[in-house]
Image (cartoon, rainbow, N blue to C red; front, side, top):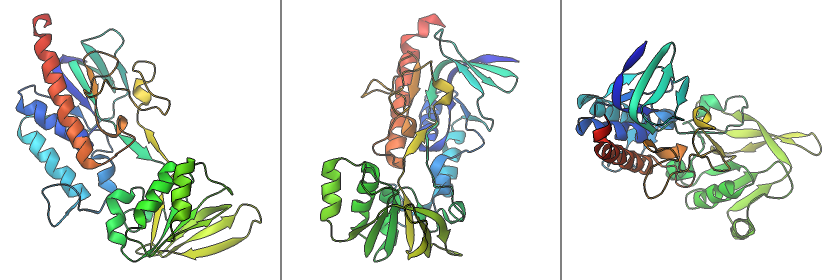
Length: 313
């Protein structure tokens, strides 16, 4: 089936996509959103969100996403739960979006497919996400006051997470599979100088311990092969993120890490009429509020583009 021509199609949900949907819907652009089967993004894995403005008592991540969706729907956003199979951006607008056996066309596209945290893939890790297992110190560090924590990783992100967590934790142990860090020298120096941070070298986490919440981790010494346990009340996995950009490879400019390149301060990608917002672009801040802000920018950019191109339709 070939669908009607839409003013804007939004691919992906989460704070960026839902904010873009809200703004484009209020601008009477009748957005069509393919939110995918993993609708709501990473906040669906978060319990308490206490750093999103307007909620003095905090809000559950899934509840926040549900409220944002209701607000966008109220103004006329049409939602579809399918995942997009392919897109064709090569010939300019109108763009083609292929879902199942159907093809949808749009004058503009907003991409908000996000990024997924890399996890360790060890027993109990997934079960305890939001119950002591996290991939975002900025999001969750406040909940771990005076508790012993473990950070896994050896790059700049891991050092940033560990240093941030020292504001709250009683101690932070950094577990790294090698005997030296990959982080930049300045980040290493800061971490080594912090009295709250200790390093567990040549070790990998093989299991997360705990029934209802994290109680510790099981470690494997990569040199001796010996196993041990390390008590902790929180595990922060800081081994990187992977942007969800597989659909757009070869059609949009991506950076060396696979994130979509935009013409800042706008959200314009390398293809005119295609915009991107949220964690699929941002590998620095990765916060719900910054993603929402970018979603607003993308909506305004798309609205402006449609106004400029109005004579073509």
